[in-house]
Image (tube, rainbow, N blue to C red; front, side, top):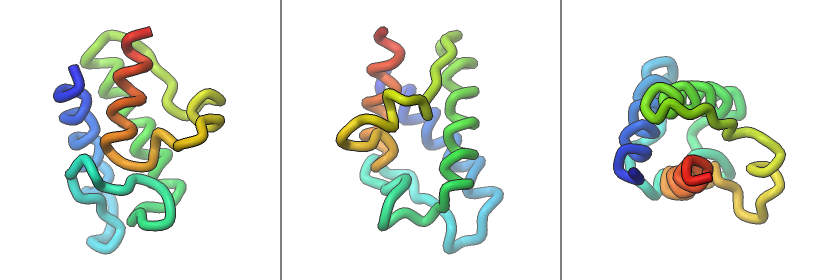
Length: 96
């Protein structure tokens, strides 16, 4: 399941990158910083990535999830730190 989630994240990154200038693009590795000090995207880019990813997860797993809810925002370590932490968080949500 995790590999499929990573594929969905990469696909959403591709969609985001297609809309952004070269200096505002994300690479597709599990260590890529999605949001924070070292990220190439701003808060609007994060919102676009989240919306795209929520739709992709819904389409693939036939399950609606909300990535930007109180639970995500209240965690000590943000699930939006890297591709890997986001994949872990999505997998956790899907198992519930």
